[in-house]
Length: 64
Image 1 (cartoon, rainbow, N blue to C red):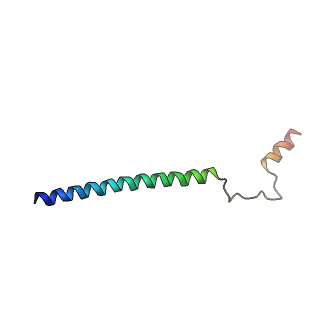
Image 2 (cartoon, helix red, strand yellow):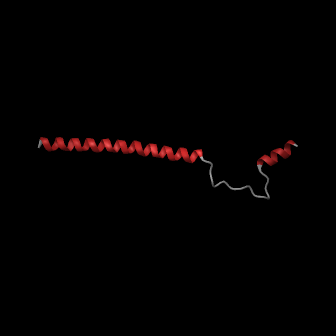
Image 3 (cartoon, rainbow, N blue to C red):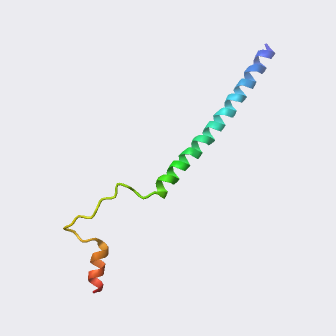
């Protein structure tokens, strides 16, 4: 009986080790994805409409 409990203890410890490794891997992968997404410009930026001037154009007109 004691031998069976010891074997389960080793198995549980090994499973816990792999859960920790998997958790660290998932966190690193998530950080890498978020970093890459933040480092690249948003590709879904809308073009300013032709009828409306941008804020920079309005500021330039005010300065003139």
